[in-house]
Length: 474
Image (cartoon, rainbow, N blue to C red; front, side):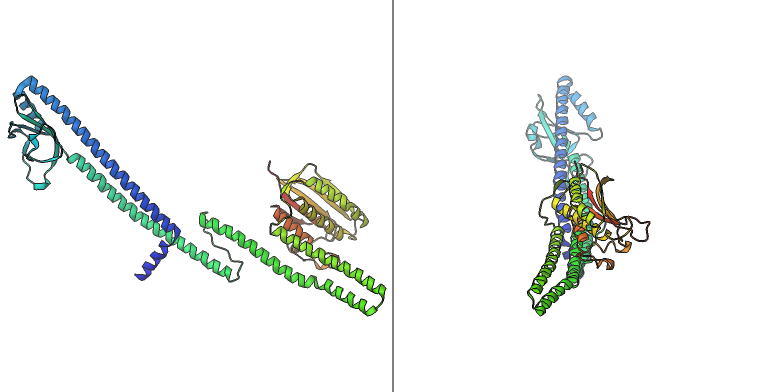
């Protein structure tokens, strides 16, 4: 019993159950008011129709008396009294003594006043057993004929009363069924909501314990619980990604930045050991170069973090990506030529995307710089290709090189921070270029795609990196 009460108390604490209870109460009040109002109006309408019917019959009786006299009136009332569902008919003396009609007894005082009776009165027909206070009730109109006799024409109130009783009885049955159904639905909805909240609470506790891979459960119904869980799951995915990125950055900083810091220390130690002024100057210049590289690395990390956190330095707007691609190609063309590379462009004119010009330009510059770096000295016909086109509703800006390429199973790894393949350790760089480009594309609601430039080759397959932007809506 206590367990059942505890579950009911827990159910009542849920929002869904409380709302169901409020809706049930409001519905019951409205339904009761509506049915009582309809039954009362219907009863009033029936009584009005009854009153009009009695008034018409009284007029007919007066005309019959005027035209056929007392004998004609008696024959008419006798004939009408024998009909099924007949009205009440009484002919009484001026003193109120019943002379004829189909009523055996009448509540005292009804025949004393001419006109409509003010309140319903009790009566008893012939061949009906006396039922005391449970005798039927009626409304009637009393008229006085020219000879002094009194005539009562009335109508039993059983039909309106029965109608009101049936309607209200139907109301009570309907409300009982609705109440039972509402309680059952209330219990089922509340129980389901409570179970879902328990599952969400359990998942939340595991998440708070440190397991960021956990996700809030969804039922697939698309209701408000599912929408809330999906939003929170998206947020958790973002937090998990940022946490993994932070862990990766910490590990890679400890590994990749250890070497330049060690070189700085060794150069300073060598300069102190040499003791010559020229050695000091050369060592300081080399240390400045190493420091500049460290600053560039930390600037790149800061930019990636700001982009991933949505803290871009400028607002998003419609930008001419054709112009950005053309300007970048012209900027890097001399660099490519100095490295013995041919830079080829195929850039469509007049293409716009919604984005940040500075970030897009920086990401494209990183891709071109990587392409030049890894295509240099790769043999064959080294070249860099930059092309811009519309493809299946997207805008695709691609940079392709003829370098060694990236193995298929490593393409997801090279876009992570500080990740550099073993074959590329001899090349200068920090391993942040593709990571920055990926963060920029995520900010622009696009994607970064990597593919082989020459998949048919065994060596020097090259790498094609595509920046895929959604088209600007008109």
